[in-house]
Length: 319
Image 1 (cartoon, rainbow, N blue to C red):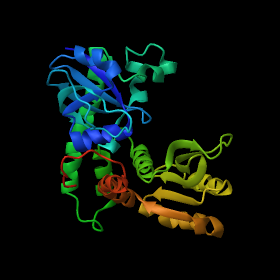
Image 2 (spheres, helix red, strand yellow):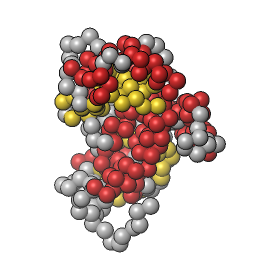
Image 3 (cartoon, rainbow, N blue to C red):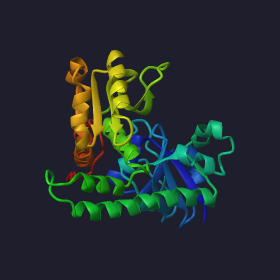
Image 4 (cartoon, rainbow, N blue to C red):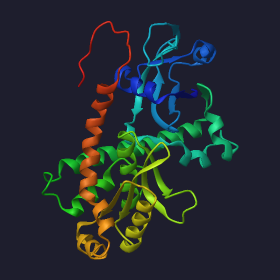
């Protein structure tokens, strides 16, 4: 058995996941020799360029064939070198595995500083140990997904949930971060990405500034939304970082905090009416509800906005 790394674009990955179901692997004709070398039962890992994340694993199930019918989103390339396959693990956008975090443990990446160059090209083989590492991380996500569904099914209706119930639900989500603070940051990063911001975590207010923001939503490189997450630590410092963000043209500042800390925040802002007027205070529960709603809404939103020609023999219902 061999283990293959296939590099794909974000759009083609969504097409594989949402339309083709990872039942077909296609590559440019210039890579036909590599596709021909695939054997039945070989494993294929999908790496999503630009996002620098792993998104799926599939198994080769059929023989090589060539077909130039259009299946993927690329306007110029029809990916004629093909193999039937079946999906093993398929992750959603908020579950993708960050390749950079695994780089130190990858044996096929010798120069860790230039790790991105090892993902250039459309297809290559990787060692079994490296495949197993990726597979293990994906299985952890799937396990957390199952746990999250169980916990979510036990939650009270929105509006009746306690703060501790929300925190437990957040800690069960299939995310990569380990702490409540960092999981909230990961969720806000994903929400900003859904909204088509350039999202950054631990982002300096400006390049030479002493303060870092927990999360920043940018339009290109221009500041838009500054977010601080305060579930422990110094509330005054979080407030001061957002005050600095306002001075550097962030149009909106948000402080995520426990509802029990709201009274203290209002005392701190008593003599800062301008900052108070530009700031929103969001509860942990509100971030969870927004994140869960976004998972469904933005799935359909992408399809709704998509305006590209697709060669269709017949229509399929969106569901």
